[in-house]
Amino acid sequence: MKTFAAISILSSTLWASPMAAAQCEGVDFEDTPFTVCTTDPATEDIRLFLKDDAGQNLGSFGNLQAQVESTGKALIFAMNAGMYHPDRSPVGLYIQDGDTVSKIVTREGPGNFGLLPNGVLCLASGSAQIIESQSFDADPPNCTYASQSGPMLVIDGTLHPKFLADSTSKFRRNGVGVTADGKLLAVISDRPINFHHFARLFRDVLKTPNALFFDGKVSRLYAPQINRNDLGFPVGPMLGVVE
Image 1 (cartoon, rainbow, N blue to C red):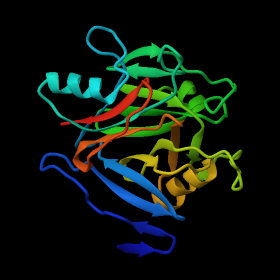
Image 2 (image 1 turned 30 degrees about the vertical axis):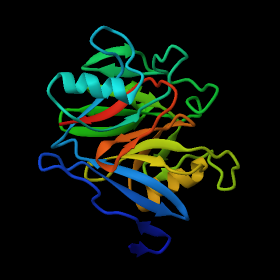
Image 3 (image 1 turned 90 degrees about the vertical axis):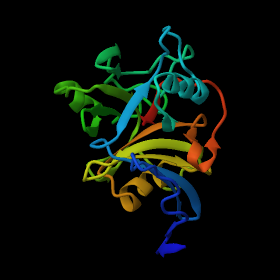
C-alpha cells in the first residue's frame, strides 16, 4: 500500500479497459475511505442521463445500463449527479444533448442546493468544467450536458466559506471535481463525513481547483468492474461513462 502522510491509495488501477482510461480506485483520507473514479473528457464518452427513450425517468442504474446496452454500448461507471424534486425532475439547470430541460437558479434558498455559491457541471465536446452558477448565468458556455447542484465544495482553490471543520452533520456524500489538466473525478465517500472533510479531499488530495457537491444520503455508485452496484431509492440525473 502506497502512503503519503494522511493519504493512502488502497488500490491503484482497479480496472481499465483497452479502449477507455476510466478507472476507479480506493483512497483513504484521514481514516475515511473514498472511491474515486477518474475519466478524461478528451478521450471518453461522458454523459448525463435523466429519461429513457419513452420520456420516463430512468431512476436507477439498472434502467440506465439497459438503455445504454440497447444501443450496443457498455456503461463503464455511473453516479447520481444532482438534486431532484419528488418527481425526480432536476433542481436547477439541466441540459441534455444540448437541450435545456430546466433553467438555472441563482438565488439563495433552503437546503444544500441553496447554500451559495453553488455551481454547474458543464460537459462539452472534449472538456468538462465546474463553474459557479452566477458566473455561468452571466456568460453561459455551450454545454452538451449540464447539471446544477450545490454547494460548491472548492471554488478556485478555496473551500466554500460556510463549511465548518467541526460540523456534526455527516452523511455519505458524492460529488465531482475537475483537475487542472481537465480530468473529471467522480467521488463518493464510503463512510459519513461532513462538508469540510469532503471539500479538503478535493482541494488537498485530488488537487481540483473547482469541485461540486452532488448529494448526500442517496449517494450511489455503479462500477461493475469492481463489483459495485449501490442500491437505494430512485434518483434523478445520473452521470455515466459510455464505451
